[in-house]
Length: 305
Ligand code: SF4
Ligand code: SF4
Image (cartoon, rainbow, N blue to C red):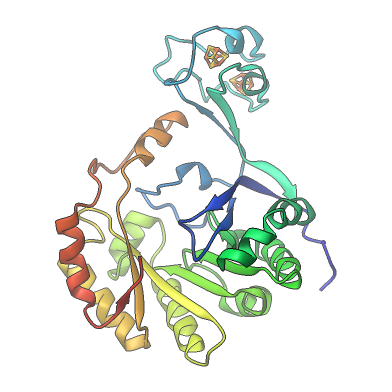
């Protein structure tokens, strides 16, 4: 593959010193764009493959600078969402001018070289902690060539690479572009009922389950860590029926490890900041009791926190 031919893609954030996205100290690269549309997505600002404007009323000081400079007259304190998204042309003049960073641009075009340069700044920390770089999102495989080139560069520098994926990708392209450069893959398993998966996530689960099975079977050959993860969404994925079916599926695939992800309700605040309605309601974090009852379905697995 030619070096650095993937152009620019939209990066939402590059978070350094992350302790939550794989082993050791990591830098997590959040890509913007996903093929799924899960109603509870905890990073809703990462779903669309285009820049967005976010407004946080909690840090707005009401100075009015944004409204004066908006060329579309799209900003009004009388608007419950502050910004009229129908008028907004995404020029981001308001975000540039806002003194409190209440208005922010979501999504910045970056090249492989720019992301790699940023990620490699902490290479010494990765080495000392057993960490590395995690590609997350959104869905990193939305930008398969970019991820391939980025991971090739990182692995060339001796850096551990981890891909967090929703599992909806073309396996042949993934095998060619991602697997040769990935140290680890975390793949999310959500709903075992395909029709329900389509209803809640925007696509059925057939490709995802097929890809999960193929990855788990490939990991049995050694050299690649695959970790299935199940986000515990209240009343959706954390039901007895779904967890029992997921455990049976993973066992049949030969998986020995699984991670159960607590539900994080703060995504609804992010939806409001993006000016979007929520179509799913659950406002409590996963309780310790609920987590224990969910873990009981996976007694035959090592449960990775
Ligand atoms: S991004 Fe531009 S058009 Fe949209 S609200 Fe801000 S200043 Fe107005
Ligand atoms: S410029 Fe920023 S702080 Fe001032 S009113 Fe607009 S959003 Fe609020």
